[in-house]
Image 1 (cartoon, helix red, strand yellow):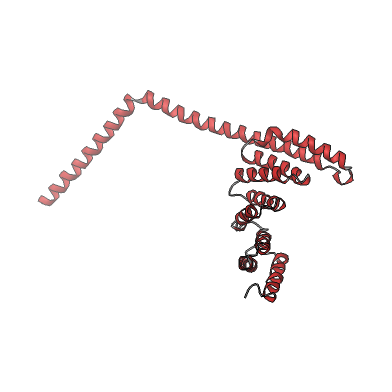
Image 2 (image 1 turned 180 degrees about the vertical axis):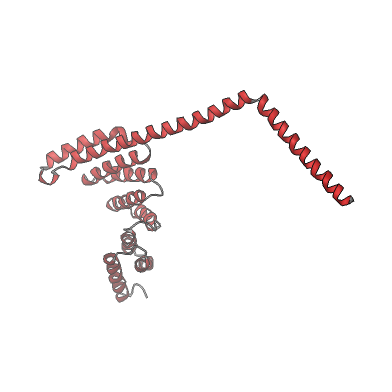
Length: 237
């Protein structure tokens, strides 16, 4: 019987604590209702402002990308049928029109720099092209486009005779497991190492191509051919 009394008293105490807590909460809400209402309004307005900002930003990005696509279309339309002087004039116009977008961040700035870089590559202005490819890669770091840009930056470096930089940029492409032209980057890096006399380093890169997730038969066949020749020449075991 005593045990039941203790339990009943305990239950009563629990109920009293709950009632007290509820009363305290009610008093708090009553005393601070205006402040809480203002805070709620601020939060709601914050979400609304964020949604509006995001919508405006998305619309701006879409509009800017549309402008860049128009510039590209004007540059490339019927280009195969044009004389060099006309193509050069179109390139000048495109570069001028792209200027306001080159320093923008995100996909807009990257896309503008990629188009400008392509124009400079066509003109064999490898330094300007490489700088633009690298800027675009930085703006799209961690994406597929970054590997495209790093690959082209490596190609520009080769044209400039900067083999150290070329190897650095090809290595970044090789590290991107989702890049579909990864085997080509491995082969190009191997080819450079071979030209520098690093035959073991070249063989290591050639040998890895077959096991890549996106291995290209063409580049793997070329790599295997190089391995056979290097062994035949006694340059590797």
